[in-house]
Amino acid sequence: MSVGIKSWLRQAMRLASCGAAVAVLSLGVAQAKDAAVTSVPGKPALLLGTFDVKDLGYDVNEFFVSGEAVSYAMEGRPPEDGRWTATPANTAPYKTRIVVLRPTDPHKFNGTVVVEWLNVSGGVDGAADWFMAHREMVRSGMAYVGVSAQKVGVDGGPSMMGIDNSLKKTDPVRYGSLSHPGDAFAYDIYTQAGRLVRAARPGGLLGPLTPKHIIAMGESQSAAFMTTYVNAVDPLAKVYDGFLIHSRGSGVAPLGGSSLFGGGPDSRPQKVKLRADLRVPVITFITETDLIGIRGPGFYAARQPDTEHLRIWEVPGTSHADNYTIQVSMIDTGSAPLEKLAAAYAPTASLMGTQLPKTINFAPQHHYVLEAALWSLDRWVSSGHAPPKAPAIELTSTDPPAAVRDGNGLAVGGIRTPWVDVPAARLSGLPTTTTNVMAVLFGTSEPFDAATLAKLYPGGKVEYLKRFEASLDSSIKAGFILPTDKREILGLAALMYPGAN
Image (cartoon, rainbow, N blue to C red; front, side, top):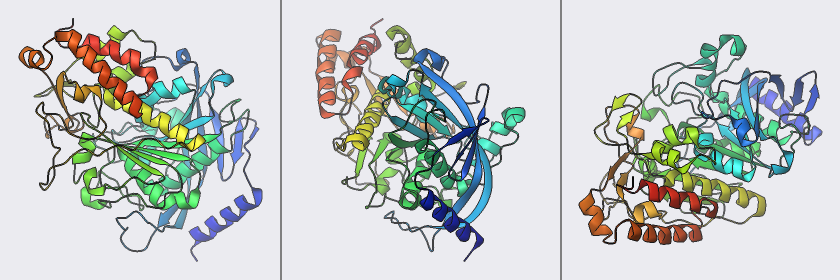
């Protein structure tokens, strides 16, 4: 028996004998299970928007988390059906950080904590899902925890952008003591973060709040790691009450810790489904870009039927990232003027200083349907009420397949929204160019010209808005857009209609 397994068994026996661990605060340090937590005064290095979260009624706190993490291993090649049988392998010390956002008013807390696996594809910790879904988190009264689970975010390493904006490089004084043993240990680090949240008691990580449910969430690269987590680690850890896997392809992260950007697409398991015997509810959210694929096969190669604990939502007209990702989310407080939001959604072909051949995707439905997915998952784990099932986007029989498109160039099937059923633009997850490393994520959008709009809507803007609202009502009734977003969506539709201003 290896030293790692012996350590893990001792740890498991200790936890079993202790029952539910309780965080004990003493002189600013909390002990919970096998991790120590230290409060770190000052502003954390994590971009959350250009607004002050205090204006949203939230406090921000940062904590260093340290302890001993285990890695996992399995015999043979991971099966594509997701039924992975992993065992603890080695142990290593670690010290990372978590960022906690919690409602200032305890009475506004709904009992749910979203724990995000921070995305490091850009060479820096990125709160991708906070940006895309913070409106719903705040509106529902959820708490949020961002976990620096991967080595790139802490120490640096291979990334999509080839840059190092790791914590230790950007602020060596504040973060110089952190140390990450590698991504093979990231899964257990994420588990321990969840345990700390679950063990939180008044005066601890969540201040006066006591959590009832914990939702795991991660986008893109984080979604690849989260898929592996669900297949291999969750059956052992049993920490999270539900998972929102946002924008994954068919491939997943390896257990051994090799980088998704260091060895090409064949360095990780391909075409992997989620295990059929899921322990808790899982929603997988897929854009057009994810479905067709960025590098290697897209999610189409890992499609599977919905089950008692699984819902797959494929959303046509969406791209992996869009105007909301980089512009609107930065200013979207829930009370920002509609005119300001509409201006941020405005079509642009400029991406991070580079002029592209076509405008990037500005489709709002990615954001709004993701909000509905988070709300639905929260209700699912708290009440057992399962979300609606969604049809799949229709694909051609070619190899590789492509989305079947209607006469307006929009994908057929999937979750229907007014932006594709009452369109004013051709929206796609296909990139404007494949030569720009970031552009492959942002899709395309082509606003219809006056002649096309006149043909589609002979009654002009009035007819468009009437039909748009009817379609929106259908989306809300189906459960794929939240009724609380209706007023804002209609206001944006009126402002964003071509020639409206």
